[in-house]
Image (cartoon, rainbow, N blue to C red; front, side, top):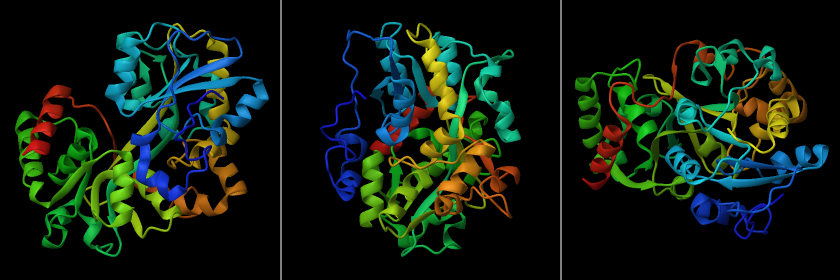
Length: 377
């Protein structure tokens, strides 16, 4: 596998604690050099950090006698910028948050997929026709993994009852202890839920102004705005005690390192993040790209994705759950991917989870500029 591993905690002997301090900011970029010669037996992947690490793709590389070359990005805006700067054929597979799939389609960055190539019969009903992945009956992306966003908190500071509402962030005991993952979308989504908007990203201008005003009133409580690594380090150290708009993809990593943190889905509800795989338009190895998506949605690939060291996730397939229970029952129980009683799908089926989306009635720029105003207030 081709990667710059000089800062990679899984290949350079760096301690896990050190990795949590560095996070993405210090070495997540596995660069694909521009103009490098492309071989038939290699796959180029554009994705969030972790998806091309050996514990995820090593078996695929071995089975198909290929190499996975990866370019990691941080955030959908950076992903779009990278694609705009790259000639066709630079990437074979694009992993993206589901809310960006339609932007990729409109920009002509991804191609249509044949639904029969992928195991949709194995998907739970909620995910078989996931709206963000389809347009006019055509399929453009396949769900790989998902998770929930709510209020992540330090159990030494907040009780489960206190964390049952986003409103606790304004409590005196949290003054100077609220942190933000520095992205407007999940943060405003959570505050919109607190404001009573059942469709938190599809709101009127008046409702949007109320969301922004409520957010601005939180600023005296805020310790800082952090990237992935900063959120990990600040929650672990106790610098912050509550962070809205993140989830087990952060606290699950910290729990493995012994931190007394967890994520609650407050009574106002939570958000769903979703990561999806698409084949790039102009991909030089489209058949290999299809095989890669098929592998990652197979039981083996699903388990490798769910237990990825960079950040864990829930799985959309039944056989993925079954395989995880077979090979790692402890993690299956921890994440709620069990078949008896309440499980990871219960919150979704009870209507307490809303898919994260881009703003509907306002522009992306409006929400982003408001976030900058909040940060600089």
